[in-house]
Image (cartoon, rainbow, N blue to C red; front, side):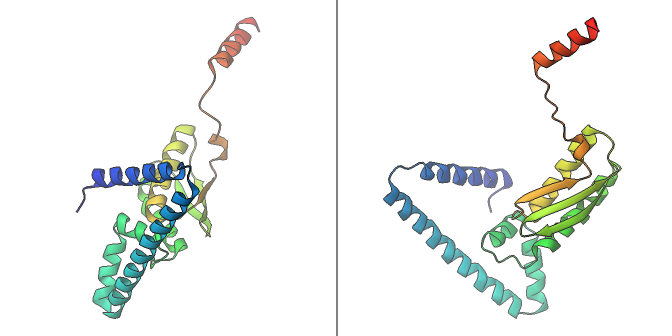
Length: 184
């Protein structure tokens, strides 16, 4: 089994290879590579589907094993990639939010699902009173959510809008603000 850091490195390597293949000028080569990748994906998807069918057909023991496999983020990501994840998208999102609640309470925050459809997620956050806490809470929820539902395509936070001002202030603006205060 590949250790976690090596696994992350492998994923980065794959992403880099895909970017390089996208940059290939020869359209015939691109088409062949895409067909190759799709064929491998289809083969793996069929194999995963057959494994899931066999697990389900064994009854309670198979379902328990499937549940433990789905808890592994790598396995879960592959099942999502192939459209085979046994837990519905909204349920995975709800579980992620529930799993984050104790950590959120340490910030005085609470998260509620506002909606989860077709990869779009809306989460209402309450109890946040400053930008630092807002960033920490947002980061925590994003991490939990994307681990449980890597197929999420958008994530909107309701209740943190007043903290969305950029932290970066250009040096020229700081100089103008200082000059304005000194002269006025």
